[in-house]
Length: 115
Ligand code: 5GP
Ligand code: ZN
Image (cartoon, rainbow, N blue to C red; front, side):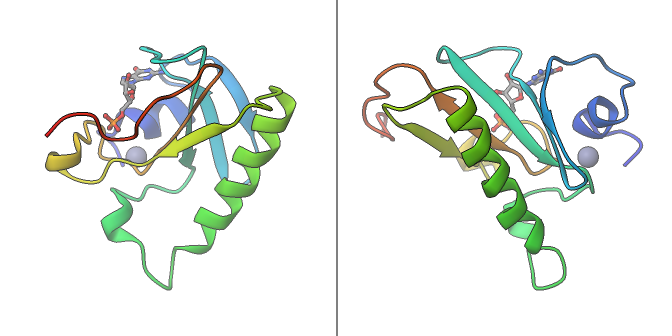
């Protein structure tokens, strides 16, 4: 997608701090971390959001979760970690390329704190 921030990051047109890469996904440090570990995992093929997942493209989600588990283990997040995917405006999705936030490195508290 020509105008997609994360497609540009995957292509190397915008710099990022790479954490992990394989044929399906790219992972990099979030520019505004909310915890000691905050890594974004994105499919290399553009998918706008979780709402676009279907039988044709959803296999990449399993691959990404495998990658997340490997990275979490490598980063020794032994106390636990959280994966978040925001979908759509009510959830606060700001970048319209499917992504999974891996957050950890401190106790994370409740998942939804505001009404
Ligand atoms: P969302 O709000 O869509 O769930 O998450 C988008 C995430 O992308 C945010 O956590 C934000 O900090 C991160 N982000 C936005 N622009 C950039 C960027 O240019 N580089 C990096 N590394 N992260 C970004
Ligand atoms: Zn994209």
